[in-house]
Length: 112
Length: 112
Image (cartoon, rainbow over all chains, first blue to last red; front, top):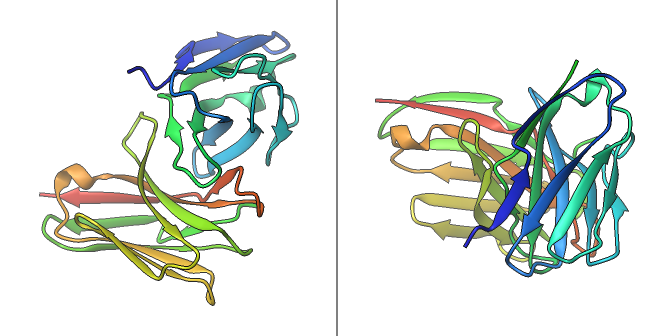
C-alpha cells in the first residue's frame, strides 16, 4: 500500500520556469492538500480539495494553481517560478472531514 | 496568521525524562491533532482530541485540551532518543473541518 506518493522528489528551476508537482493517493480519500514548509515557518496550507473537481485556497495560494481532475490525483502548478517559492512541498490526504492527515515524503524545490 | 502556535520552539532533555509541549490557538475548533516529523520526512499523525474531550492517552503520549483557554499540551513520558523529532499541533480552520492549519512546531532533542 503506497499511501501518498509525490513526484518529483527534487527539482531545480530557474526563475520564470513552470512546473507541476503530482500527488497521488491510493486510499480513496476525498480530501487532499498541498502545504509548503520553510525553516522556522512550520507548514502553511497552499490549496486544498474536498473532492474530485473542487479546489479551494488556503493560507498562501498566490503564485500557485491546482487541479483535481481525478479523485486520486492532486496537481500543484507553478506558472512562473520565483526564488520565494523555494521550499519543501508536502501533499496530504484524509478520508473524512474529522480524520487524520496522511502525508507524502515531500518534494524539495529550489528556484534559482 | 497561523492558527496554532507551539511552545517552546525547542526542547532538549535526557532519555527517561518527560517532555511537555504546548499549543495555543485562536478560534473555536472541532478537534486538535498532534503530528510528528522526523528530519527530512513527512509528518505522521500521533493523536486527535475532539473539542468535547479534555484528555486522551495513546501509549506514552498524553494530550490535554482546554477549550476555555484555547490551548492543548502534549506530554511524552519516559522519552527515548528515538523521540527526537519536530512536533506540530494542527487545528481545523472552519466549522466544516475541511482543512487543517499547523503551528510552527517544537523541536525535541532527546539525548542518551
